[in-house]
Image 1 (cartoon, helix red, strand yellow):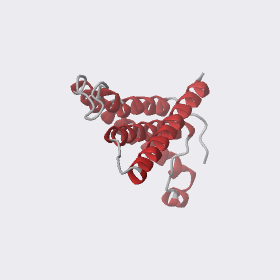
Image 2 (cartoon, rainbow, N blue to C red):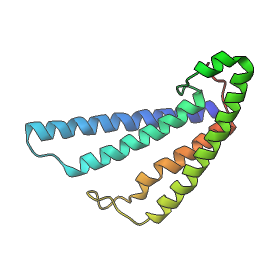
Image 3 (cartoon, one colour):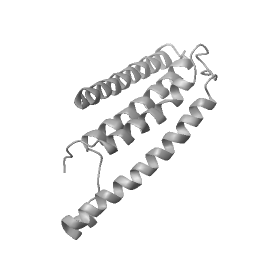
Image 4 (cartoon, one colour):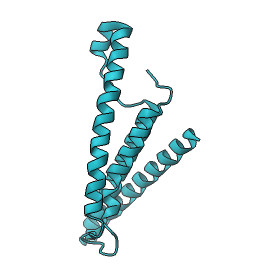
Length: 149
């Protein structure tokens, strides 16, 4: 079940990033060939990129593939590494929870706001990227996978 959810989130992040790349390519083509860029493409592309980054971060946390600097823990040995990982989990949990809480507050505050250039779309779709990804990261922090070291 957990690997299915990770694959689904990873596929979603990849698809969103691919859509952002296609939109930006079309935007560049319109700007340089026709000298007539579309304003909504740039805004939507920015929001798609934010979604892909946050969902990708949740997947990286679930897989244990975030970058680590291990210089000090390598010097300290296995006990230092264990303490460092525990401290990392505590600090990450606090940070993710903080961002998650205030992210949901910000999303709720913008519940009825609209995109600037795409007026029929609610802006809350953009603001939900952060709290939803942080919720996933808290879940993955509590429910860890086998880490690659």
